[in-house]
Amino acid sequence: MLDRYWHGDTERVSAEAPIPVIDVSDIEDRPGGAANVALNVATLGAKSRLIAATGQDDMAAILASKLNASGISCAFLQVAGTPTTTKVRLVSRSQQLVRADFEEPFDISVSDLIERSRQDDDFDTVIISDYDKGVFKDPESLVAELIGRNKTVLVDPKFKPFSAYRGATIIKPNLLELRHALGDWGNDTEMLTKCRQLMVNVGCQAMLVTRASEGMTLIEKDDESHFPARTREVYDTSGAGDTVVAVLASALSAGQSMKDSVAMANVAAGIVVSHFGVTSVSGPELRAEIDPEEATGADWKDQGKMTAEQLLHAVQVAKSRGQKVVFTNGCFDILHAGHVDYLNDAAREGDRLIVAINADESVHRLKGEGRPINPLDRRMTMLAGLAAVDWVVSFDGDTPEELLELIKPDVLVKGGDYGIDQVVGADIVRAAGGEVKVLSLVEDCSTTALVEKIRSL
Image (cartoon, rainbow, N blue to C red; front, side, top):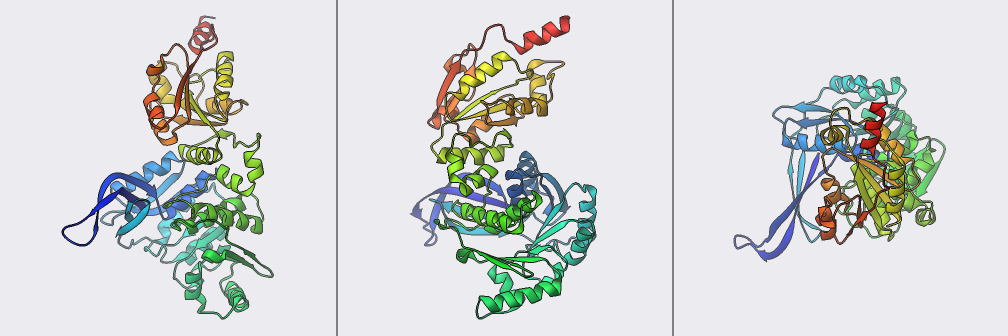
């Protein structure tokens, strides 16, 4: 699904009807539904692949673009004549005033889903997100296929009989979905008894019941554990269930125990409901919430390569803790002493240093034939290994202006003979209240000079 937000101010009432008029100033698109689940997995740092139904329309193209930018592989089953499910929310002063849904049920064959899952078998865990939109008419045969390939299968159900998910590893209903499956119950003991009988009937190993303000209850064959809701202001519950199942699956895939995985999912749910709209939780954000003492200590950094989406979440966490974020960019084709000294100086301008580097095609356009010497992944790996660097991200354009618009760092740093007003993106950073600084580079250190010297040998 695509979640579209129309933001604007409301300062008058319509003359046509007693309703507020929104002067729309911004349109924001976010991945929703199963796309939000995939995005949550990716922002935690796990490899994420999405198989989903869409139309053949602009909304599907927007979804693909946003997901690909976050490193998510998309295998869309596109149906001509059926629109991509889209939810448009009109928002003023962070309050939803109305929602309009554009959707029609899809007609998807389970054999198509199975075939798409076989095209790339490099995964260990599958999340089946059932939204009752026609994609999972026969989920039992899909579950059987996946279990037969030794996959862990988690199901976020809707209102089908749970026997439709027979054989799944874990089923994660909310209270409404569970009541639809079990009928009502008088107390928790009766609920646990009914759940265990249902687990036997459908052959699943565990059930995780999400209970809104009452937290979550994990039910296993011979044990149960309750996880109270994290105490914090609830701002928006949109997408909270997506976050829970994504974190649970990712933690299990990383080798965590069932209880520890549920505990992480519970913490993540507390984070996501405190934000506006459908959103995701990053690894650094989750770590900071689980261990605030570590997160505020000098050693806290999720150092390494990131997508733009992951970086945004990491920056938000850092800023929420009063940390100054520094941004610099370049090609960094052959890392040399001048680069190292410059990055050490840049890191001293704040608490976290982001290094944004040009993608290979961008380097080729800027530097010419034979460049880059080192491909993007190697350049990112080398930079991520420097003690001064916290986060490394790449960009496709010739300038990092889109990243600067997204991240809005506290300090933008460039090295060389630039004047302050010549620094690309300076206006973006200043408009957001940040600073722009130019640092000197070590003389006689140049990647281009090194390349020419090597070629002349």
